[in-house]
Image (cartoon, rainbow, N blue to C red):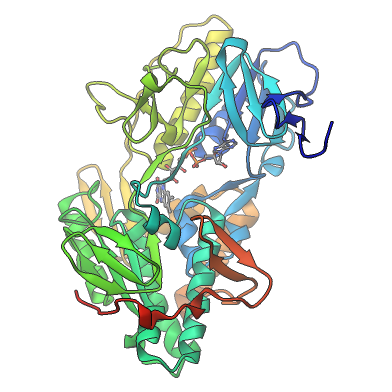
Length: 471
Ligand SMILES: Cc1cc2nc3c(=O)[nH]c(=O)nc-3n(C[C@H](O)[C@H](O)[C@H](O)COP(=O)(O)OP(=O)(O)OC[C@H]3O[C@@H](n4cnc5c(N)ncnc54)[C@H](O)[C@@H]3O)c2cc1C
């Protein structure tokens, strides 16, 4: 067969997968888990060394700790301290195999998943594929901005920021310098708020040291939120305190405002405002991300898979969904559970017990979510906490946030690395290395890329574009 027709067992010409992914022989029921995020890994942990064959498939060979992406993006942490290799995680789990592959399609009639590396069959399939950034159909915004849903996104943001700050020192054009040093973050949820706080601290503590040629007022940070408050999912107290913290850090918070377009230089809002900025970070929404093969009737708002109270996907015999991708719609949860790590972990743990119950013909319970509260940080020593009726903000909330996050990171080495970095930065306001190790540029298809040569996206002529700051 011609080489271009046959790639990794997939016959491009006929779209039929011809190769089977090799797995250890086993007579145990096979549970295939797609996605090793918080939900998938909690399920693996629950099924380890049990009488089932577990196959974890992920398009990456590592688990990512998404809550700290913003710290990698702002040079606070190195990427390897918040990702953890699956093979290290499952070391010693005799019944668990990992396969690096991207699942492309589910063929439920034959209990088969088709991946980019080959196919495999399952007795039980669990989709734990999470979400991707939702740009709500705004293609130009997607092409010209960066989301924050993957460790590579965080590194791209870091490189974009550092390159633009360097370019700002080079250019003699005042308008271009403004564009290069203005940052717009879209979305006032935890990810946007934490990113804005970290950038503001970068501006306050790092900029004067690293770029003595700039006044610290050169870097403007805008946080754009469509609703009338930040952190909508938290209490009014947390929302208003967060607003105060950010404003004290000189972040320009634009509430009841949404971005309507962005051409890479000028941000346009629905109310007609424009902001000149070469840096736009999009944290305003996510949508479910799952392979094809699921009937559209079982897909609900946010592109999530509707499940019953056992987390089984509606209309399917042996396919389950857990984590961000799942929407258990009930009277109590008309919009499904919140798309947060603790819900994903609880669902993974629950499904491990449920699957073992089904396999061993034992009684199974319904899934019920225990909300333990919410935390968000807005920079060093500042955070907000809603723990049931207990709502507080400030240093103790930040201390709690730090401990909870440190304990949640996978791996002892990673905990040590993060803890050490935080300790250094606590006393010195220093960030880890701010090095540009690859040239980053946005490409025209909306995907990001890096280049080895010195070609730079900052060479565009901003004078040809509308360039007033009007907010
Ligand atoms: C920037 C940011 C900050 C956040 N902060 C917080 C926070 O502070 N607190 C909190 O509780 N939650 C936070 N969240 C949300 C939290 O990270 C998610 O709720 C959680 O990651 C969901 O877990 P999951 O297992 O469902 O999906 P994910 O963790 O997204 O994992 C999905 C996995 O599936 C894999 N995958 C996807 N599709 C395929 C495919 N077709 N084939 C193979 N593999 C595939 C991916 O590679 C990934 O490993 C944050 C999220 C973001 C993006």
